[in-house]
Amino acid sequence: MQNHLKLFLLLLLLFTSNVLAKELKVVYEIALVGMAMDYSEYNDNGDLFDTEKSAFSEIIGSDFDYHYLFSYSDAGYSEVNFGVLYVSGYSDYTGSLLNSNNPFGSVTSKTLNDVIDVSLSYKYNNELNSLIAFNYGFGLGYRYWQRQLSRTQIEGYEWFSLRPSLGVDLNIFDDTYLNVNTEYQYAIKPKMSATTVASDFDLGSADILKLDIGLSYVVSENMDIFVNAIYEKQTITKSNTIIVGNLAYYEPDSTAYNKYVKIGIAFKY
Image (cartoon, rainbow, N blue to C red; front, top):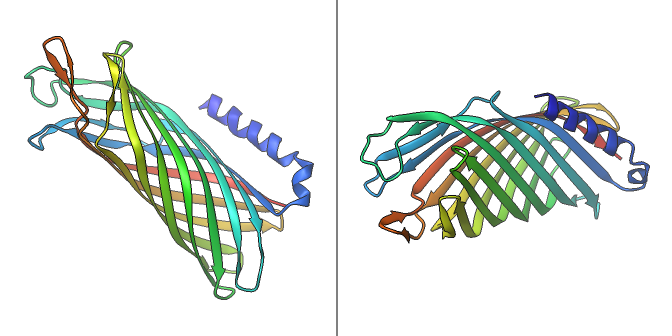
């Protein structure tokens, strides 16, 4: 927790001291993040193979977002966004030994997770009136999830993705706003690496549906505070099979219902 707090304070010092930003219409957002993981893998019969679960306090990290606003008109404005999310921590593994006939639940352990998500997107904000605005956009992203089940068994899931989005912003009180945004992430050539196999696995597909609900409060002309609740459904389909000796390895179908809570500050220039 202390390392993440130091990173948060470092980002705060770095971006608030950027005097050049005062000449631009930009917003810097920095936040502390907690992630609750609920991941499940299934065998070819659709039976549960293993799970990873965590509470918000067990996988934590930081999020940074940069927004450049431009092309203002009576109808609205455009923006380009760049974001980086990093969280790390332990989840509870429940499953069975690889290539064994032991049932689900015969093995329990702790898994160390590292998740990195990077995004670059364009969004147009259509302001209908002073109370409501719609937004839509399109982005590119990169996601990496390292799953360390033991010192000798480390798996890395990696892909780039296309990310269309749609949302609405509501002014619910004088200085308080409700933001609801949805995003679909379509992975391009998703892969998984494993220390137990020399070759990478080609995942059948990897898609994420994301719902982001946020509340923001205008503290001053140059500062907002916000809290966001984020829900993601990640679906990965079965990979190709790789033969090593007499054993066949593959990445099975999986579904993850992951939740995030973000608490942060936005600096506006």
